[in-house]
Structures are given as C-alpha cells and as structure tokens.
Length: 575
Image (cartoon, rainbow, N blue to C red; front, side, top):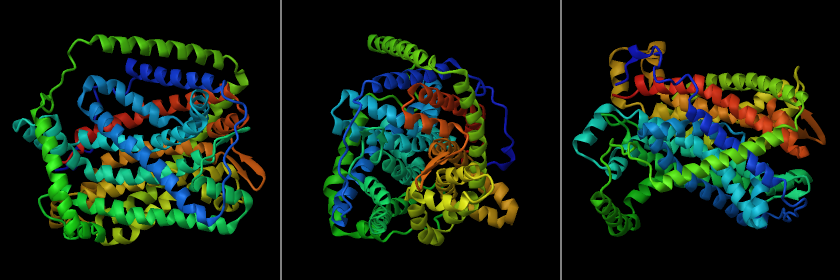
C-alpha cells in the first residue's frame, strides 16, 4: 500500500540532477535533424497552390472522414511507439540513459515551430499531396505520443514489487509478462491518456489542415480547413455546421469507444474489494451480451490469441527482468552508430552556418523572450493545478458524476482552443496588461486538460479497499487528502505536469502572437519570436529560438521533473 510516511523527498544518488553524455547526445541528434530539415526546406518550391475548400454542408461527412482518418493513423502510430519505447526505457537501464533524455527533448520541441521545417523538407523530397498528408500525421503523432509514453513509462516503473516477484517465480517470458502484468496494470492510465492525446490531437489536426507559409499553401480538406475557411469568410452558418459535426464526432467516440474502454478497464484495478459503483457503458454491456460479439470472440478472437500466445511462448524470449545489454555490439549496431555520428556532425555543421547569420540583438531578444514565456508557463501551470486536482478527484472517485461530466470534459478538451481564442481575446485585451495577461489565459486552455485527465486516471485507480481502510480509520477532510489521495495521485500529477508544461510552451506560439480582426497582437516571449520568424521565413531565427526553447525545457525536466519522477517511482508505488 501507499506509505504516507515516506512522502519526504529523498536526495537521489543516481545522478538525476546533472547532465550526462546521453543528454548531450540526445540534444545533438535533435539539433542535427532540425538543422538538416531547415536546409532542405530552403530548397522547397517558392509557390504551392492549395485546394479549394467548399463550405457546403454536404461535404462535411467527407471532410470529417478525412480528419478522423488522419487522427486514427497518428494514434495507432503513437500507440505502437508508446508500448515499445516506454517499455525499453523502463526495463533497460543503459537504454534508459539515452531514451529518457531524448523523450524529454522530443516532448519539449515546440511542435508548431517544427511544422514548417517538416512540411517544407518533406515537400522538397516527396510528391506534394503525400508530403502534406504525411506531415499532418507526423504533427498529430508528436502531439499524442509523448503524453502516452510518459504515462506508460510511469505505470511500468510503479508496478508493485510483489507482482514483479510473482512474474519471476512463474518464469513469465517477455510476452506473457506484457499481456498478464504490464498491460493490465497500466491500462487505466493508458486509456485516460489516450483520451487526452486524442483530444489534444484535434488542435494540431486543425493547425496542420490550415497551414500556409507565404505563397505555399499546404491546406488539406478536413474539418480544420472547413472551419478556418468559414471564419475567414465570416459565414456563421458554416461555422455552426462545422462545430456541430466536430461535437457529434466527439460524442460518438465517447459513447462507442472511450466509455466502453473505461468500463472494460475497471477489471484491472489493483484492489481486493470490488467497486460499489463501477463505470457503466450501455454499448459495452450490449457488446458483452450480444450474440454477434460472443460468436466473434469464441470463433475468431480467442483462437487467434491462443495461437499467438502459444507461438510466442515457444520462442526463446528472455525471461522478464533479464537483460542482454552486456553483449558486444554487432556489426549492424556499429554501422548504425557511425551513421548517427555522421548525421550529427553534418547537422551540427549546418546549424552553425545558420546560427552565424544572427546578430547580438537577435540573441538578446531570444533570451528575454524565454524568461517572459517561462513566467507565463509557471502561472498557467499553477492555475491549472488549482482547479484540476479537486475536479479530477471528484470525477475519478464518483462514477455517477463521471457519467455526466466525462462527455462534457471530452468535448471541452477536444474543441480546438484556437476556435475560442477570439472570444477570449475580446474580454482579455480590455484588461490591464493586454496580451501579456491574455497569453496566460490562452496557454491555460492548452495545458489544463493534460493535468485533468491524469488526475482523473489517478483517482480512478485508487483501490476500493484503501478507501474503506481510510474510512474505518476516520480519515476525513485534509487528513484523508494528505494520507490517501495526494500520495496516490503523485505519479499521475508528475506525468500530467510534465506534459502540461510542454503543452504550455507549445501554446505560447499561438498565445503570444495573435492575428485578430485584421490586427496583429504580440507580447514579448519566445513563442512570439518563433511565430514571427515563421511568418517571415526567417529560418536562422526560427532554428535558434526553437533550439533555445528546447534547451530550457530540457534543463527544467532534468533538474525538476526527473527527480520528482524518481521520487514517484521510489516512494509512491502501490505495494
């Protein structure tokens, strides 16, 4: 069980508070890829003609299908990446030293500043239509994968030791441990973070479908392009139709996908007493009892799983917990290392060439901008914590309340924040400070859902027997929060805070530089610098501002979030 007496943070002795060669290597890899992409982007066509976006309501079903297909492709890619990458980082200590710093850097990259580099570089080497579609999927993937991967990694590193010992005693190989222990234990967190990732993906889908760089039009037929075109033409009827279809899709996904998955995942809670009010889903109950689903399970799914289990159990897979990391590297591994070194060297050379074009004033602007944005990120994160913890605990511990509020939360989190920016700006720009204050509110809209969904997942995973024990001990009010609720939530809060802070840095690009009613509003910040560099095609400034933001976020992750992650792993596991 959770040991509240261990809540004092211990000083870690594993070197988590200092940079390592792995951190430097991961940062160099990202610098190389971004700089090479920027140089390829310089050779892209100067003018690209985009598609004609119709505002007829009759095209909405087709546009909705295109958008959902892009989201589904990105989510499947994110899920595969999550399961493989998170497991490798959790169980292979040598790989973890590289994979976690690389994940820190990847999730800290401002996606919207990276989009022009991805789009232009892909367009320079691929056919136009394929490049735009692939860039959209990559952009959505980068908005989904990191949140899910951190949640999966957190689940694997907090599995109770007695369950791990049991898997060792039964000599479960890698596959059997995965399907019998790891996936069930992490299922609740994975589903809730999948919901969050899907909801966040809508924002970046909209951004990808309406993206233009000067005379180059990369728009894609979809709901995002439809809503953007309707807003440009001031067609309120079309905006209503577009938002209505988006909300309808969100509700259908909630009823036919997410709510059934949550009802099904309740069986995986680590508890000795059954929940009095488990999550309910009419569609899950219908599937569970319908003749069609029973026949499908009996004649197809169960035999298929049995065949897969039998085949994989016969494979000489390593026993869970074993490692082959001490083997000498093969020729292929050595070749890949040489290629990686070559890419890093070439990318670093190109990066230096680009950065030499900047003046001292540019670097001063970047430095002051990072400081201003950091203060806004901190304010947005604190404001998000103030309301997401009590609301998330209320939803996660009260299934009846969750039945009512879960669809509302899904819709609120899925509606692209940029669609609400104009209405919010009308009010915030009248306050003292103008966009400097408004930017915090806009960043809050892009961060709060990461925290809320993780808090709900953590509260939902509290075992019923611990709740009964707390009640029998007379723990009420603040004592119950400090003894049971907050220690249980701690790993989930850290996961949510990491992804929320990364989301706030990303949101700064659209929060600090806003075009509204024919006017442009900007506030001092690194996000505004990146947005202005993108608008003007200033690739050296774009590269420098992006890399500076990445470096700052990595430092914060290394000195603040990583030690807290270690604390969650050492002191707040259920055992």
